[in-house]
View (cartoon, helix red, strand yellow):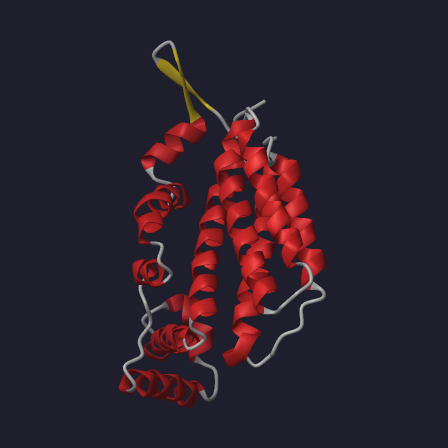
Length: 245
């Protein structure tokens, strides 16, 4: 297990407990979408902790990647609630594409969906919404554009690029996970032995994202828990100075 794991659990549990007392405007165009994004951050981090406890290294990279994307989304929504429109147009684009394939029969997996009564009307509704957004100059953003909008382009071309390779199961990821070389040959390992440092980088990133988002939310909503998050940020620096076990 990682030496950061006990601190990660502490940050997660405090985040969950203090979120119970937050009071916000539930309108999605006010605080609703932002707070759902914050809740997703907490849950992804809880998932990362569970994988670290279970020493399941392969899956942790994929969860960390989703956690990073959630933090990007949180930052954008925090600065601009109108980003919800970009999320909505993507929602309608995605469903338009699925329903179109179901309707024209080009994807056999969608056959049953294609037989649903009212599918054409629903498809027309989704397509109309897409056009309505586009007429206002609103479109869905590619993943790099989201990172740029969050002021995290350097993270996109470094951290995100690396973890995406693992999430996509590229050749390097497969070799590191399963091919352990010895005397010019290799043994196929399933659930290879992990060491504490294997989870340190991802836990550090997750802790940083959650503490940053937590401080921002509690500051914005004038929560009495804000000083506790400030204290945790200081504690993180102390934890990072501790030598690896």
